[in-house]
Image (cartoon, rainbow, N blue to C red):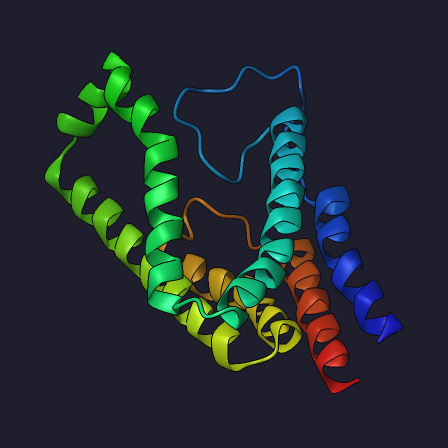
Amino acid sequence: MSIGILCTLTGPLLILLKEQVIANDIQLKKNLHGKDLDKPTLYKGIFFGIGAAIFWGSSAILIKLGLGHGGSPIGGSLIAYLAASLAISPSALFNKKHREEILNGDKHSLKIALLSGLTANFAQLVRYLGLQFGSAIVISLMLRTIPLWVLLFAFIFIRQYESFSRWVLLGNALIMIGTVLILLS
């Protein structure tokens, strides 16, 4: 289990330390995506990623507690998405720039955004169902395969925006090996 934990922690660190980024003093073009980030932007992304991991990781325990006291997975998913909508709505509705961006966007982008929201909602519902019937630890470890799926779907759909360097692939492989080792122990 210790080796699995070490692999799981080493994977993201390897990507952080070895992934090639552009120098800080180079002026970035507008609308630059993915591969060509400067170090401060990469570090900010890592910081927010770590925060998301901490809150996401602890949420499984809270969800399991709620479901254990008679909660419903569908109700839990509904509450989670309503709460998120209430938290985001003021920014989207009361900020003129954001409101215009939403209303004046092209139809293709709107379809992709809606599809993304629906698939994320369905994934969350399945997560709640899994937590109702299974162990929080096992379900959380199964969710650690998400980097593998992200890597696969990013390669299929948006490879022009993402980096698939050997460090990214090795880091993801370490995460997967660590997850398997933890599951087997």
